[in-house]
Image (cartoon, rainbow, N blue to C red; front, side, top):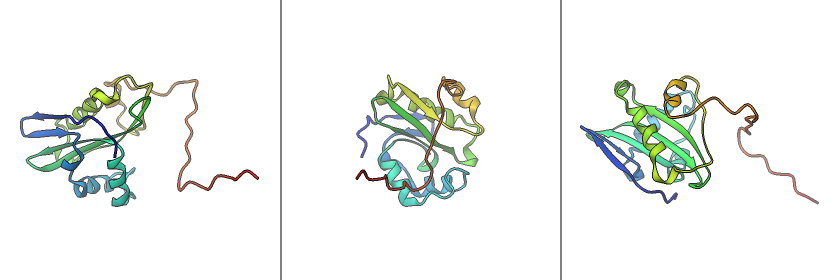
Length: 153
C-alpha cells in the first residue's frame, strides 16, 4: 500500500479525507460504473487501485458523495483520475475541493509532472494550473492487457 500522509478537512457536514479506510468502496464503485471511463472497472480492480493511489473521498453524514485519486511515485510524477461527484451533490464545489486537496497534498509537492485526461472538465482543471499538452511531446498509450515482451535469444 502507498505510504502517503493522511489529510482530513471539514466543511459543515462534509468531510474530505485521504484515509482509504473511510471510503465506501461499494458506493465509489457505483459512481464509477455510471461513467464512460469507469463503466467496465471490476470492483477488485478498483480495490487494488485504491490501495496503490492517493485517494480523496468526500462524505456527508457517512454518505459517500465524491472520490478522486492520484496515481503517483510520490517523487516525480502523478496522474489525476477518477474524479467523480454523485449527481445529487453536484454544484456544491465538491469536485473542486477534491482537486484542490490533491494539488495541496504534502506528498505531491515538487513533482516534475502532474497529468490528467478529460473530455469535458477543462475549465475546472485550468483553475488549478493544468493546460493542454506540451507541443513538443507526443502522447502515447498502450491499451488492454500487456502483451508478453519479446525475449532476447
